[in-house]
Image 1 (cartoon, rainbow, N blue to C red):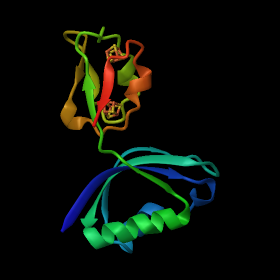
Image 2 (cartoon, protein in one colour):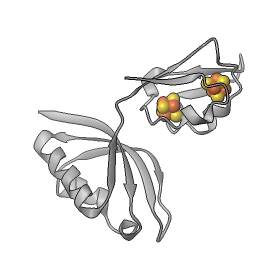
Image 3 (cartoon, rainbow, N blue to C red):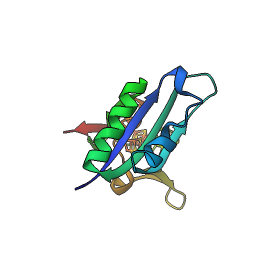
Image 4 (cartoon, protein in one colour):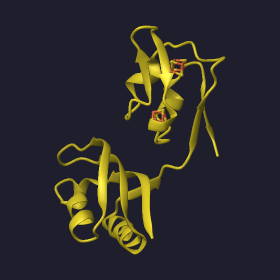
Length: 136
Ligand code: SF4
Ligand code: SF4
């Protein structure tokens, strides 16, 4: 059975120069779609990606990451926006890694495209009006 999940990977410092994602693909046969990456030489790094593959390969790949000391978090939360509270200030659009929140240049309204949302929660603290909520 095929598994496809969106995950946040937090890399410890000692992994910055290791071919971690390449190993997930070559050794564990997982395919990936990188949604956001912040890797700085000799520092901790962060990556948001969609990982897909057979269930056993997926589990082995996640075990490989954990053994390396990579922190793995799954994105499964449901993000909603309270239209009454949103003032379309645009603050959330700068932080959204997938452009699920973006400004419509014609109307200057902030659009929330739920299909693109990966539930990373970065927009929740970014909203000064507490318009974005997390539902389980
Ligand atoms: S949770 Fe917020 S910041 Fe993250 S993808 Fe969804 S809308 Fe964008
Ligand atoms: S930061 Fe909050 S109020 Fe501003 S556009 Fe985004 S959701 Fe709306």
